[in-house]
Length: 400
Image 1 (tube, rainbow, N blue to C red):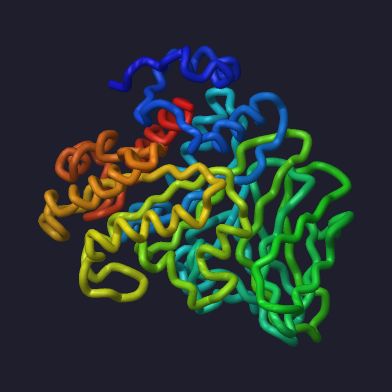
Image 2 (cartoon, rainbow, N blue to C red):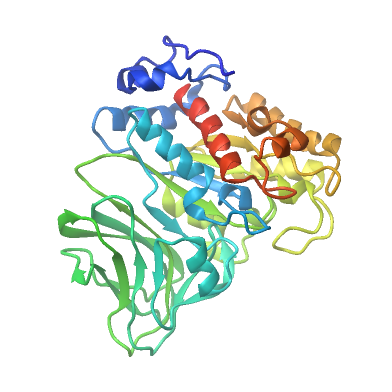
């Protein structure tokens, strides 16, 4: 059972929590707050007092960040543990939103991308770009093609949207609409220029539910590349969560600079997060499962170095290290080997005095998690398992 919530630790949080939330007993497993969590604390305080946070909270990681499994029992971005965390924050009086779509994870075809996220719609000729970065594959509309819509239908009503796109030599222009009605400002967007990932913010004249739509302005235009979108209601400040899951990736993949300005670190820099979950493990200790097709696990020293190198690139974001569920030791690395990777991550958290979300504490080892229907295959949780991971993240977040 989680320990009782410490009411002296975060008075501003307590003031914003419902009585029902407090009664559930929200545990603190992160240690005492330090300056490293200041940006996260400020973000939570902001929404509890009716202001917007300075940036989003992003989830960086592999398939266990994205709500994946490999046996067909679950493959749904909207059921990832980050989405469940959002649901639970709202239930406890902390306004939060998962009205975002970023990349296609490991889905290399439009049909697979559409099946993975039911909020997505892709008109004729929209395709999956054969490159991967933060969020995995992204979206392309080819040059000299009759305009059709890229669509995203969020849960909440919105009057503003951020579109993350690739500026590139010869790039085309796109318009942004909601249910066929053009945005009142910020659209159209020209994407021609030197290569860089950029954000366009568009506004609508009213607040309503509906489908956010992106379409080329005409058929005689260059390629258009879309990484992701975020929608919001500017009258209702919420913590904005974005999953950047890249199924099949490992800690080394995220340090690649092969794509230049839109390599993984460039994408995260463009998002300017206030906090960042780092959820890597299964493709580092398991052989032959990474996007790069490696046949051996990441060396332990390399794994540790990869984590610190990644974190050092984002000094203004609160880092939260996430311990994944244990993989089946009869199929992959032994439990003892997996524990060495866990302990390497934990050592970094202790050394840097940053939060560490221990999901093996929540799920148990592979045998126990399987018996409790928390594992969907040899290395991915079920929907119930992802809910448990979200619950662990909730306890940790509300400790601050």
